[in-house]
Amino acid sequence: MRKVFQRGWRPLLVLILLLTIWQLSCWLFDIPKWLLPAPSDIWTEGIAGWATYSNHLVSTIKLSFIGLLIGSGVGLIVAISLHRIPKLREALYPLIILSQNIPIIVLAPLLVIWFGFGLLPKIIVITMVCFFPITIAALDGFRQTTAELTHYMKMAGASKKQIFWKVEWPYALPSLFSGLKIAATYSVMGAVISEWLGAKEGIGVFMTLASSSFRTDRVFVAIFLIMILSLFFFAVISSLEKLIVKGKPKGEENN
Image (cartoon, rainbow, N blue to C red; front, top):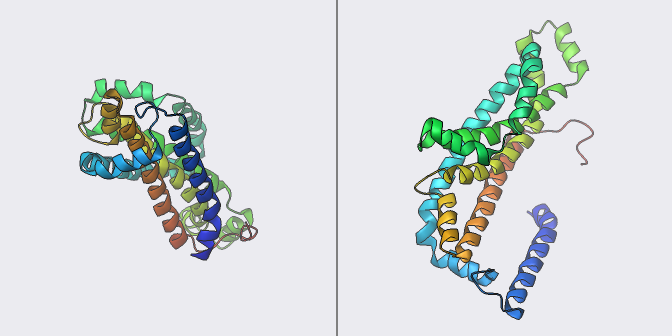
């Protein structure tokens, strides 16, 4: 707990300073609430409007979680397949890179045309933004396996399957969790974007309605909810990493 406080007090202090400057600027320059609400106005709306956006928040959490699970599964399957089959990696790796150059905001309307307004296009959007960091991180982790251990396992008569699960997979776990933490934050962003496709509820829908009615305070409430939800997902993955990844390779312990 002491380590967490020692590491976290500086960012917290900077955040408090920024919010204070923001609050004072709104008061001193008499900025209209519809243009830029003060943090106190956002806080008041966040508390008073809980009944208004609570259902939207729950919907976004469910969508983000489902999309993250599916995206993580797809990313892992792709990474393992490309690692175990080098020729497949040579053929598909460039295409995976190119897939990330397609703007999701442009692809989203096409997904609605192809698959309708149901859950499927939303899951596809989240999967597309989540699988890439997991795939790349896992592949990098597999390649970081020390050649000495692999050679030793081969000398001991281990099969490729045994080498993968006994050596390569454990070595890839730290890199894999790095990809998962990135994907966890991306999943919330992907969920919000997918909700703009025509969902009935969700933080994306709440933000759109607030923006169209010039309720800027509610727009900022939605922004802060997205940030908090992303940090929550990140914290959950970090906690799982501490439970699963028990040790670090030599040379990383002092980092």
